[in-house]
Image 1 (cartoon, rainbow, N blue to C red):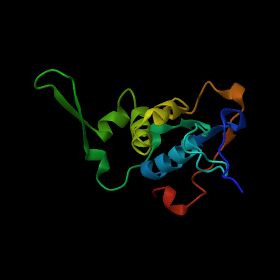
Image 2: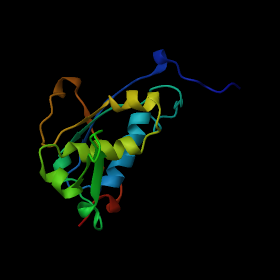
Image 3: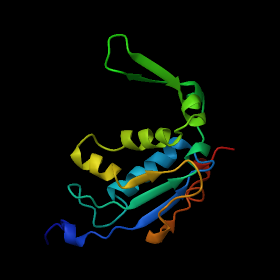
Length: 152
C-alpha cells in the first residue's frame, strides 16, 4: 500500500462562510487556519494547497478573553524611532477591524510560501455583507461546535 499524495488535479475546494459574531478570536482563528490548510480533509497533503476558501463576516464583533483588548500591538515604520503601537480595542473600533482576525489566522499558519498562498483564500469582512454570493458558500456554524467558542 502506497501513501496517497494529492496532486493539484485531485483538489476540490469549497467556499465556507463563518459568522464571527460573539466567537472567541483564538478559537475562530484556529478553525479558520485548519480549513485554510485543508487539514480537515482525509486526503490532506502538507505540500499542496488543499484548503477551502473561507469568508469571515462580522469580524468587528469578535470576542476577546481576559485583558487582550488592552494589549498593545506594535509595528515599525522603518524610520529611526518609528515604533508605533495601538491597542486591540482601538483596532477593532477603528477603520479596519478585520485586520485583527487576519493577523490571528496568519500567526496560526506556518511561516512559508505555501501559507502566504493559502492566506489569499481568506476573505474577512467587518459587516454582514460579502460579495461572494455567486460562489454559493456553505455556512459553517462555529458557535455550535463547542460551548467554549462563545463568550457569555
